[in-house]
Amino acid sequence: MTHRHRRLTTATALTAAVLTACQSTDQRTPRGPVPGPQVVEVTAVDYAFQAPEEIASGWTTFRMKNAGAEHHFLLLTRLPEGKTLDDYGREVGMPFNIAYDSLKTGAIDKAEAGQLLGQLLPPWYANAPQMGGPGLVAGGGTGETTVNLEPGTYVMECYVKTADGTFHANLGMARELLVTGDSAVGSAPDADVQIRLSNGTISAAGGLAPGQHTVAVHFDEHPAVGLGNDLHLVRLDDVTDMNAVIAWMDWMEIHGLREPAPASFLGGAQEMPVGHTSYFVVDLVPGRYAWISEPGAITGMVREFTVE
Image 1: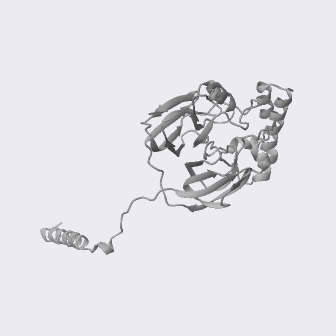
Image 2 (image 1 turned 90 degrees about the vertical axis):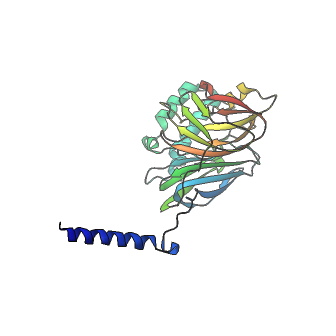
Image 3 (image 1 turned 30 degrees about the vertical axis):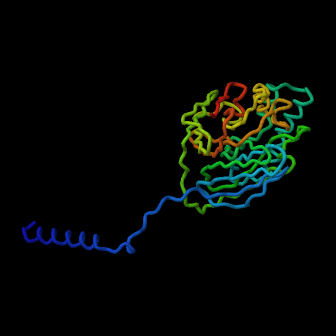
């Protein structure tokens, strides 16, 4: 390249730089803060979910107000393509009913109930992952949980039991939710408490002073069989029997997940596949609490703490 060509090239580059620098601010793309997740308002009553039928995909906060008298949660299960809520009720819900009814009559024990479920559940259920949702919330409370959802058809479900042992889902607390391919613009919330769930272990990092906190729940492992790990926050008082709370978390116990609950639950994060992260909001006052997992409570997934 000649000296003349080098000078022309340099001059052109300098001119472009000056013109770019002199552009008015209204010609540039503004860079504001990244928006948070979309918010989906849900009301849980005894026994139904009041919620939109369709939402966009992406980061989504489910704000569930429990307007009922009993505890409720919201578990999201993504159905394989072509499957519907009716398929889920008939091919998944019914086997759970059969196993639990057999337990109640004493016809089988818990180990046999697990084997029976394995025989009755359809092969496609292995491809229907649980994708989180608000954990157990007492009547009058509100649970706020954030998850990242892909497009698809989901089942919203609560399987807490009534006083007579009937699953809430059998009474109407199971419905479809369509997550469309339209993506909600948003990001995951910032968390000041980090919790990791492994098989048999709850590890927590971050201070828990009075006030509001956002808890990130990382799903590091999944049990070899059965439901995945989840996390619930329970408020304890001076007369709470922790052994009763642990036993209540096991749906395969006759009185497991059966109202009335032995303590008051404040929300949490339902199970998700390994590698996923869910977020939920807690508002703490001084007192005793525990992190507890539904399927893992009986194997030690309980972590008590005190807020001063």
